[in-house]
Image 1 (tube, rainbow, N blue to C red):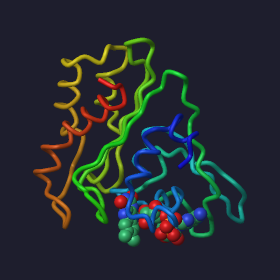
Image 2 (image 1 turned 180 degrees about the vertical axis):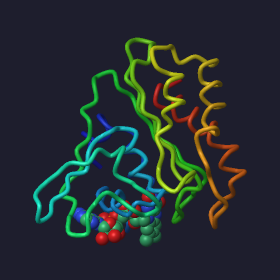
Image 3 (image 1 turned 90 degrees about the vertical axis):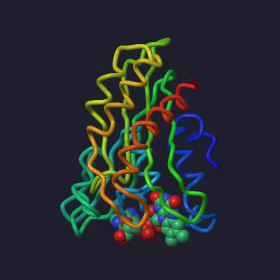
Image 4 (image 1 turned 45 degrees about the vertical axis):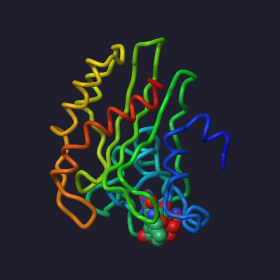
Length: 203
Ligand SMILES: Cc1cc2nc3c(=O)[nH]c(=O)nc-3n(C[C@H](O)[C@H](O)[C@H](O)COP(=O)(O)OP(=O)(O)OC[C@H]3O[C@@H](n4cnc5c(N)ncnc54)[C@H](O)[C@@H]3O)c2cc1C
């Protein structure tokens, strides 16, 4: 319900309002979503797109781990067994930063077959900086760094979005599991990223 999160971090807000059930939304935390280290984590996907750090504390003191380096493998994090997570620090978005979250095909009470989040810093119509995150397509949530390069210092046109959509499947390695198939995820990933960027940019 936070108006601050809704205004400054739309992707995180959107991932939280569609997350799970009223019961899980009332009780669950964003920290727990990140520490759970599921490759399908909805809030985790949004946080990866926003950028930030996880603050950990243990007997050896306090440290911050960049969210880009936090998930080491399937349900494995950089947290040591004797550390707890104190908080998440999100990068401060500029006034012209836009973001959005999207997921397929959950209706309720189900985790995403695939999810995505995008954060773009715009200078007029030019995208100066971008972070694209995608989930359920690898052992951990992923940033699409090669695809991000296609958007940097350029206008987000139909042509660019098509190249972005074509690039996404080349950066992921999904599997078949109980929720979906490798084939579906490869097919849908580019469309989902494209639509998430369009949603963020109100295109
Ligand atoms: C019915 C249902 C629906 C769900 N739907 C979704 C969904 O749509 N999308 C989604 O992403 N997830 C979903 N989940 C999974 C889960 O509820 C979420 O990931 C939630 O955000 C976890 O947060 P939590 O605070 O409950 O963490 P917990 O479940 O309490 O903790 C998760 C893990 O993190 C560890 N942990 C938690 N906090 C800390 C800390 N401060 N320091 C160190 N370790 C910590 C715990 O020990 C545990 O291993 C669903 C779960 C249920 C039961």
